[in-house]
Image (tube, rainbow, N blue to C red):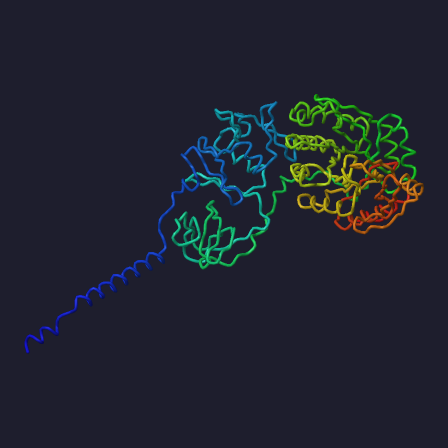
Length: 566
């Protein structure tokens, strides 16, 4: 009996093993769950995050993004290269190679700041502009901030500048937890960049299921849990510093500008006959000036008698200057401060001698490399012209993707009016026949300009000319010939062409075929002009310009005027 009881009390080894397996499995599950759901407390190396090598560098955080370029720490002040400042913060900081100085155009004029010159200095007394041993020109961000519409703050440990120049579309959230970590990536196992306290405002960059990508006030871009912040809301509107705005000169009425092609003194003398049937035009722009060489010498047909006659007819005179001479390289010449100054001084002097009211700049076929120098030319011209009470208008082609580098928004900052030349959709060198200025082409150009330029600065130019397109059967390509309104009508009659209104282009289209060729004209007439004027009125533009006097019919002037009421 005793033996049997002992035998019953014995534990099976198999059961022990099973229990051990269960216990170990449970411990493993618990450990896995703890490991999986316990947030990491690992801190990310902040210098590594900003990719800083040592204390001579500083991170540059611009509009919610950490730049690859690094700032320089010079005696406790943070500097950035002029190329970075110009491209990312304020393109008005222009390095002039000839004068070896920064040229900064502000509403009151042009500042010249040379490296090492302490006329303009930081709060620490250092020169605002410095040249490094490797030749890199750097500008103190504290100095940049004084002349830029920019929020700016400097932080240490690690060194970083946090800047903002763009506010459109910004949204923000508020931290609702007592404190929450900002992680490098979304997920509780990601390294912690920094922590933010309750009530702190964060800029929202992206919303995920359980996480939000945010920018902290001190320049970290990372992720916070959605449960720790408020719902997103629009950030407060930003008020631009009025002292940084170029007020310029603008008229209190709609502009109706007609270009007068003047290639000789005889054309000046014929002004009376050119405007005999013109009504409603309040600005005439004679093509008086051309830059003829790389020293900036101008050819000029400017005439005080012409100005006096135009004023007597109720018209201002905005003399046109072009870059059409083959001996003038816009890219090369405008890179020189002395050349820009030479051109400007001649224009101002001619205006003062003749009583001209403004300057119309018609520089075309600009290369990408020329644009920074061209924009600087416009800044310096505007400063000088406004000091002499002269209006500055600039002509530009209809914006296309391949001319995006023109940076028209920057051009428009200092000038008074930008004139979009709403034509040459199809031109002499086109491979196929088509409209010179279809309505969709013009409207698309207006819409693109309005993305960067206010309507009160935009004048839309319309053509008084068209092209007769000839497509010879059996031959590749087309040829064309320019005609004014009356000439086109006469050609239609002479050729017995059929004319039909095409609403898709906003024009009458005339066509005829012979045994050898097809002839087509997209007409510019009273109907097409009215459709273009409706666009100008619809978009609230500042006015209209016409190329050119002599191509029009007198009947178009009343149509144009009827759409220019305030």
